[in-house]
Amino acid sequence: MNIDAPNTRSEHQQRNSLASLKPLLPFVLSYKGRIAAAFVALVVASSATLVIPVAVRRVIDFGFSDERTGMIDTYFGVMILVVAVLALASASRYYLVMTLGERVVSDIRTRVFSHLTQLDPGFYDSVKSGEIVSRLGSDTTQIKAAFGSSASIALRNAVLFFGAGALMVYTSPRLSGMVALVIPLIVLPLVAFGRSVQRRTREAQDRLADTSAFATEAIGAMRVMQAFSAEKLTIARFSRTVEQAFSSALSATRSRAILTGFAVFMIFASVTGVLWYGAQDVLAGKITAGTLSQFLLYAVFAAGALVELSQVWGEINAAAGAAGRLADILAVEPKIKAPANPTPLPEPALGKLAFDHVSFAYPMRPDELILEDLNFSIAKGERVALVGPSGAGKSTIIQLLLRFYDPQAGAIRIDGVNLSEAAPEAFRSRIALVPQDVIVFDGTIAENIRYGRPDATDAEILKAAELAALDGFVSAWKDGYETKIGERGVTLSGGQRQRLSIARAILKDAPILLLDEATSALDAESETLVQAAFDRFMEGRTTLVIAHRLATVLRADRILVLDKGRIVEEGTHVSLVALGGLYARLAELQFGSDGKGH
Image (cartoon, rainbow, N blue to C red):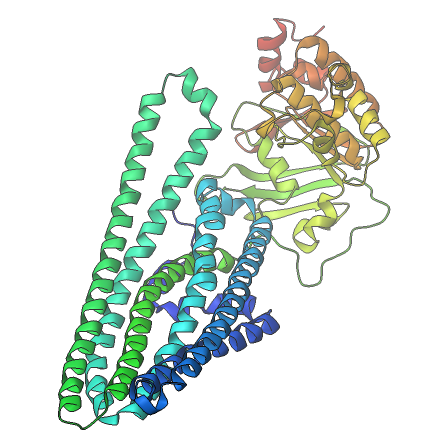
């Protein structure tokens, strides 16, 4: 599974770490004041650290002589003061950088989620929701580490490395020259090997996303899994994805461990060699023991900083992989969006619908036409039913009316305006939908109904629930409309969820009503109650009804019979039964030989 825009992933793999992180810089630069304060604290802390070797040198060279024994207290007193400044500045730097990381990642998560809500359903046809959740979870956490603790460590050690390096040159140019000869032998392999670490880290993150995707899918289907006694099969499949993720993570960790081990050996072996050379100079009287100690401390600071930077480099590579994956999402352009200058819909809303020679195939199956040269219109306030065998294209018509997809040919109009020329939120606000697959959310009954109109009052929610025959059982519950219904409404029956969906549509009070198998999960008694409510609610509204059960379409003003993406018959129930075609055969199957439905 690949959620990347075309060629995006291969392009990210070719970039270096800093280039992959570049798209995230605007999020960081939004907080220039915090960055400046962190930098000041960083400079103060680093300066305090670099002062310590000078004090150590003076203690060694002068503090232990008989005539200056009183100075040793002064030197150590100053060192305590320096350490106090170091501690305060380090705490401030850590707090500022870590909170900056938290703030940046929160902004990135919001931005990515906001972008996801703008992408058309065609995008989600080809992705797994679990992988998207992994992007928002593990990938942003990886970035938080880079912009938080890793950034704090990297900045501190970068300043220490260059500061200590400069003071090493000041302390002993000759010894510093020896160190300078060794640095390229350390840095160049680190940079080259870091690319391998980045590649392996990204692969590990991809495998982790696959694991999250499978787990999300399996948990969402837990009842089905247990009903089919498929626990062992599911566990085995999950274990395989976990092992693949572990193998990839092991490879990435092994690479980082080798990188770190190489860096530590080369750096401290170099320091040891320079120290041996400096010891010869002390014995020869070329430098003092204090000077060598000062140089040694600076060398240790620089070496330690370089080791830390090599470890952080691995974390930056991991963050670069995560950043590249998030950039993949942000790079995806929605196929369905408002034009630059959208055509306004007429006011007040009329509720007229028209399909003008529409042909359509789903993006995943571009060679298989679902609708072919479809042509029909629905007048204001008219009640029209769509019937036909499964796969005829009935639900696809609703998907196109909501502009979840654009047709390959023809035009779809609401109130005379082509949907491709209008803002999606403008015409969707005029449509109330009761979908075939009912979606409810973790929350209360009232929150789920109010999803149709967030500003609705409690009285309006109650009225909509009564019309949808929902109030009878909700009022009997202890918490009433404040009852929590669990994720996806698992504590409700199919009929209860469907009535909740109907109440949501009623509350929206839109001029166009789309009913896609809206009563399929209801028992006969509930269907009668809900159908009576719909009859009242449909008055004055344009209604398009899709139903396999023909009893629900008997009172339609017009029935359109769809087969293989084309309208093959049109009329009322009585006229279509008399015609003796496809509708008559469907009616006979459901109502008996007379097909009258009485």
